[in-house]
Amino acid sequence: MVDNLDKRIIAVMQGEFPLVAEPYKELAKRIGITERQLLDKLMEYRQKGRLRKMGGVLRHREIGYAANALCTWKVPDDRLKEVGRLMSAYKAVTHCYARIPQPQMPYNFYAMLHAHSREECQALAAELSQATGLSDYQLLFSTREWKKTSMNYFPEYAQGE
Image (cartoon, rainbow, N blue to C red; front, top):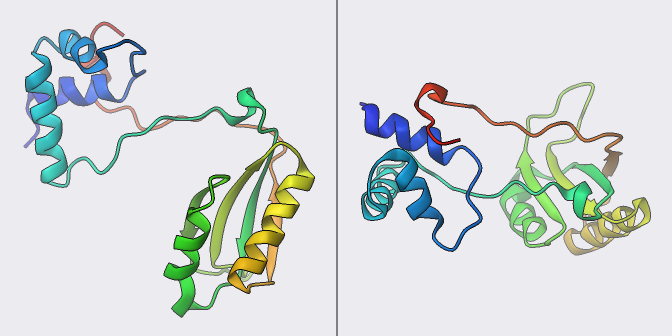
């Protein structure tokens, strides 16, 4: 059951994270509770499996990573976890995931590569190919960046935004 306090916490936590010395204190103030109460609730959500992760959204083009490519791979099913661990260990790789191959897209593993140039993306893909022993892949370069948005739960409860 989600009560009004939960809704206020969810609404505030999904917004912009304050860049101040005590961000949780600032967020708690917006909600109308203490910092300790907020931290306790977040821990409770985590323990109950209601909160899996919190993270920032990097606007990679704004910091110079102008070449981005979705690299699609054909990975044997029994190697998916191994390849996922290996590729996700690279700092320039994000969004590793497996998918069921489709007739129009026969690849079953996807990894987003971020670099300063297309040549760097190509070199990274070659390095990943060497590291995994996989050679069947395709680079799909981004041509524009779409606005990154997430679900917006309980916007009517957001205060001080």
